[in-house]
Length: 109
Image (cartoon, rainbow, N blue to C red; front, side, top):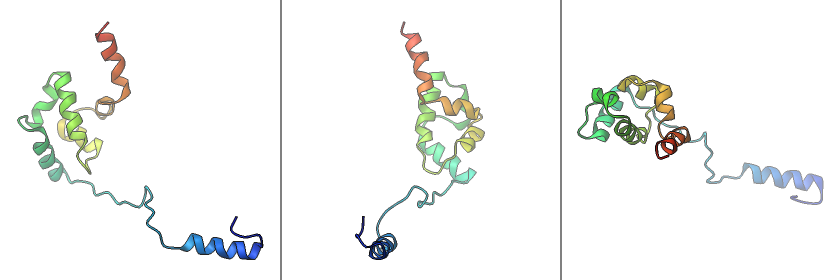
């Protein structure tokens, strides 16, 4: 409570609410999305010796490792990544998620 008196409390609340601060809200930061060309350049930098066209034909473990590195690129949308490398957005969504853990657990039984 800002004060016992209602009028004083309202005045103090308004001052508090309108005061400048350094709060950063989730929707404050405008994220820049990469163009297709910028995305291709960043993907090439990230994947090293692989070619973009080769990613979908890699063994699953290698493919997932490479895609996890690519997913860390700032400003790269999942749909754009899926389109560029030729993999379903659903596959990209599952790579690195908890959904892949049971498959690994089954593998080690």
